[in-house]
Length: 493
Image 1 (tube, one colour):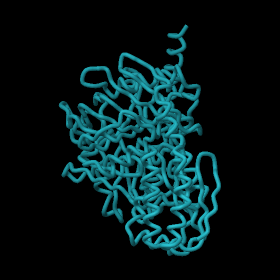
Image 2: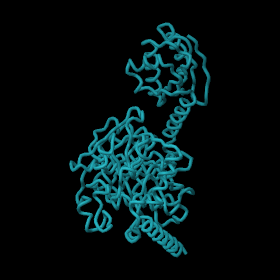
Image 3: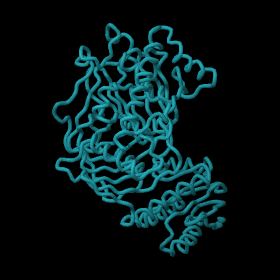
Image 4: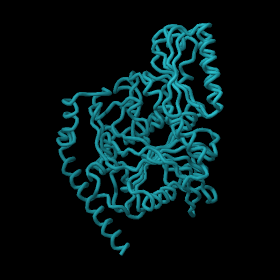
């Protein structure tokens, strides 16, 4: 049994070789005992590229080390495992509970994030905070890379109910880690076209509400995203990139803060604090919801369900047959995993491509002007789960709820939904772009097919009036944005 030790920042890497049998495990334990004598050591990598044999004694060494590091708030990562050793771990039922990575670089990157989480928790009391009439906010730094909003399909095609088989895109779960839209699961168009409904992917898990008349939601947490099960969607909004900041929010308002007021608070704080704020937020959350109000789509937005005379599904003559809006809370005192987007109309949104924004939100300028913002949020609903007083890893908290919570429902959240506590991930959206990959039932396509999908937006052969009407709507929205910009400048003089 060969053991070499190297250090990468606060992480120790053990380069292992030979056989981790009874003798090798004893030698490994002796090295670990010496290393773990340092109480500050919390992250270790076992690089196992040259390990050709692993026994139950070696597995016991791994588990023992993992337990010690967990008590210190750390982690153990395994890297470069040969197929035989992986088979041994799978046979022992251990792969799902271990952090296994193809390379040492990926393993150390994972542990660097763990170290950041430890430091953030240790410095909890020194973090930036803000008190407001809504409640208390605590801010935790996140990913510094620019975040974007990727738009699949076009919201106008949903509100006019003109989805055809050729309008369906396919996505793997890993491609839509945090997203909302309209979608379904199924192998063929016959399985999913007529039951497309509201969907959300949160931390890679998918929740969706089939429009099959049963009003019962489905929920799938993929253990391994092999690509054999694909999300089918004609319209999807995805956070492209990480969360730039995390926020712990605790409401001071009786009965909780409405979703609308919470977003307004985030908009105000973003304008004051963030140079990268451009008026659009992508938000995911682990939230304690006191009252949940929803708007439920009743039909799949396919062509055979299209309203007559070119009217939208939101038109007053159609809305009652297309939607049920809650007058009373659908759920009380539940936990929600939410994903959504907010557009702050007090900002100069001309920095974004108006066609892409139009594809994403399909606005009614008159209604939007009254509210001052546009919100679209979906939530997966669970029986009430405990929320930690301190948290810095949203992915981890969401995975814990998704895997261990009791799933109840998924809904499109109305703005009057009331939240008492929330751990939020915030993406300060820098650009809005259309994503045309994965068309016609494939998760990835070449450039030729991608060009074919793009031409669909320009030609619309089956609906000859759509290009003209779409141009009119985009121009109308652009004029609205310019009026909002002028109004904002006038108010600030």
